Image (cartoon, rainbow, N blue to C red; front, side, top):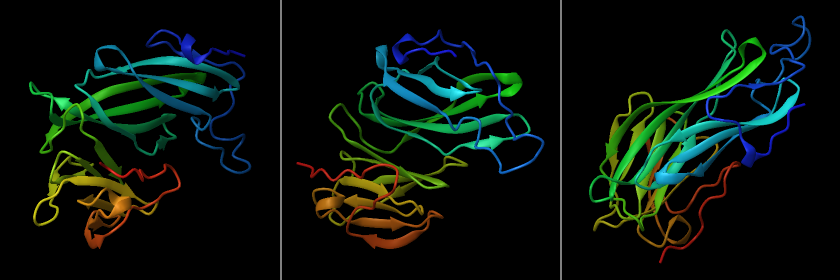
Length: 249
């Protein structure tokens, strides 16, 4: 059994080989379908030097335990928010694919531009070997205001990302498949974005004004298909992360 502590990660690009390989798709096609091959793994992200993000994978696979140092994302001006999508398992190639979204709120010469970076994370399990990789896909500017003291809000459902900052009087809705950006207006007179929250069914609320979604902020409500569903006057909760209930100053 291979056991490596998180701070003693292997060099970037290494393959993590585990003994006693288990079949990926069950034995002889009998019994319930096994979990995805990466079910025992988790990826962590931490701030590295020069405003990069270091990622690495730890956990159990093929009957062994260990960690492997993956690499870095960036550099960025300042990371405002990050998100990793649900996984897609391709049984024909024994690969698991996810998308990683990073919102940089310190881009540009003034260090207050906002830019969305898209990465593709692939976990390969062919031949009894586990090899993770992350590749840069693209990045796009967003019509938002960032900065060193800006707070960034981000939520998503299956087809769309919703992003805003407390320095902006609008948020944006971004279609994942095309990266088409749609402005989300706020109140009249204009007030800044104070929160973005979502529930497990894919409903998303974008809050403007007040002191945050939890304390008086209200704004447009969107359905799982990205269409407007009226307005909301509070935050939404889900079963994965706790919504930010901090009252803004």
